[in-house]
Image 1 (tube, rainbow, N blue to C red):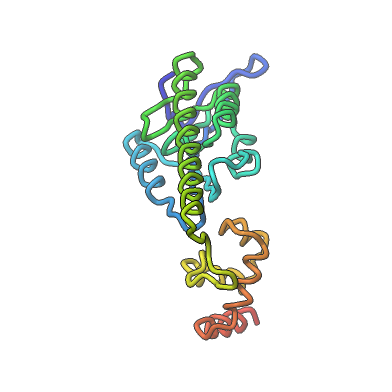
Image 2 (tube, rainbow, N blue to C red):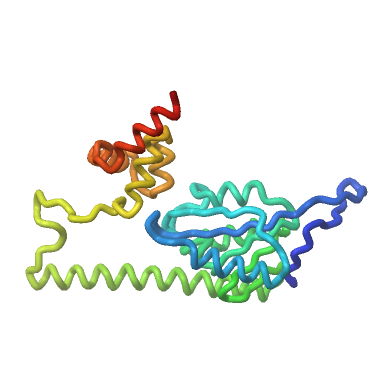
Length: 236
């Protein structure tokens, strides 16, 4: 099935013809909040530009590819998709790194007659055996790659322990750099503005406790004094 980007399509319902605007979604997924989705975004935008179309909405997940799709923003997107809509991804594995989850997602898209295009693989989803075999192959490769990385990591850790090497940080020590340090200013500003802890935890892919501890540690840093003063005066 050739991918088409027609912004409006004619559908049949109860024997009546009607026009509906179809949506073009770009789905981006990175494993952590500190990774940059710009490379994925750039590749997808270049593809859409070549096709002479504009992306209507970006859906972004900052979670591992093995997390249940239903618990991601992807799950919400799959529910609201309508016949004829299009999803653009940088590669198939962005949807999921679990083979069976990927197959379930593809089946959902086929049932709803959703267009899917993976930019790097130059793959268009079609309701035919060839497309399904290719999707299975891509998914299987991604799943095997993930398992191999995990297996090699475990083997390396086991070898180090066998050699008597102490793994991890010394007891009672703390890391020099926190994973949230790169987004410190934006995080503290969001907190001061009144963002909910649960929303911040979701945005930065950490637990609520981590957000609370980090904010408590840095909220009184001098670099935020002017912002707090300005924000409070602005609110008043």
